[in-house]
Amino acid sequence: MENTDWEQFSYDVIDGKAGGKVLWQPRILCWYSDKIFAKQSLGEFEGCRLSDIYKRLDICNRVYDYNACICRVVDEKKIQHFSRQISPLERELGIRTPLGEITARLRTNNSNGGEFFSKWWIETEEDLKIYTYYEQASDWAYDDGAFQRVRAEWGKMGAPSVFLPRTTIQHAYLDTMGVENTAYALADTPEAMRRYFAALNESHDRYIDVLNRLPIRFVNFGDNLHCALLPDEYFEEFILPAYIHRTEKLHKAGKFVFSHWDGDTKSILKYAKQTTLDGIEAITPKPQGDVTLEEVKEALGDQMFLLDGIAAILFAQPFTEEDLIRQTEEVIRLFAPKLILGISDEMASFGTMDRIRLVKSIVEKYNRSLQ
Image (cartoon, rainbow, N blue to C red; front, side, top):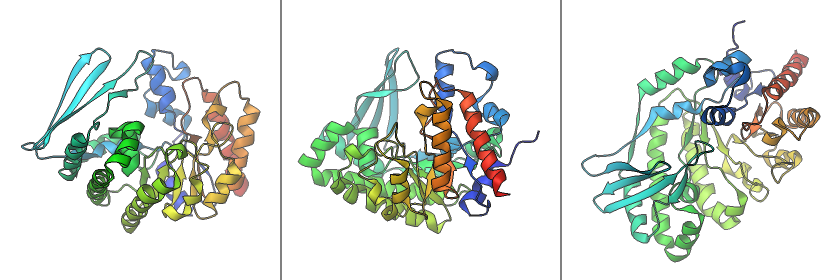
């Protein structure tokens, strides 16, 4: 059987041309990569690439692999990147600039391929100045070879998609400083932090200028927002203005713009419509997150898309197939047609493909009912 043109279906959904049909777009990279790392069997998909699995299941992917086609560019006479392996499980990365040198350390473990910071890039005010200079001196460029390689692998199994570098304070929390360092820096050196955030915004504007020339319509702010780290004053000063500015630039180029909110979201959902986003990805409902689907619907209204919506823990025991069916049907009832149905946020390695197929069957039945 010839596979569905999921790329065109994706465009039809966001353009309101799908006749109210729902797109099922589960992300299973975590399931796949964890099993590969642990050398566990992929069962019926043994020997398959991730793209092969999507093709065999005839399901749509949100193809973020296209991130590889936009690359950071620096003047190598002024800025040099370096790295060294410290131990089998730890490596050091470095950036050398005319203002000085900063380093970070990343540690992995034996249970999965993930890494975490054992030393952050920014730990002093001097580090902050150096990193601010680094962003000010950075530009971005398109790599057509990378674009074509991703296109060759994924074809029409999903629309080209990218996620932007994290926004202001989320960049500090997750990419350069960590929560504790960020909190102290905002209290002790607020103007230096604001200069850092301004440099990020200007750098990301240059990223958007490159992106806006490309045939990539799906643009995500990969921020991993969690309301416990974003009191109202932080959201209103650091997140909301940046979102409105970014989205305005992207909308002028016809992009569909959404953000990734995958922590607890109850206290920030009230800002959803103010962001000017087209939708929000990965809001995690109960029994996993801290919000009900009704609360999410109230926040998004009828104009914003929900991307995902099914709690990831429902794809494995001890939750039953009936639990999964119930929430899937509720998501469709509340959000269709402003819905790209998926897993909030990814299926874990102990989830089952039977449940991926189960949701596929529910969506197909719903879509047939519209005909």
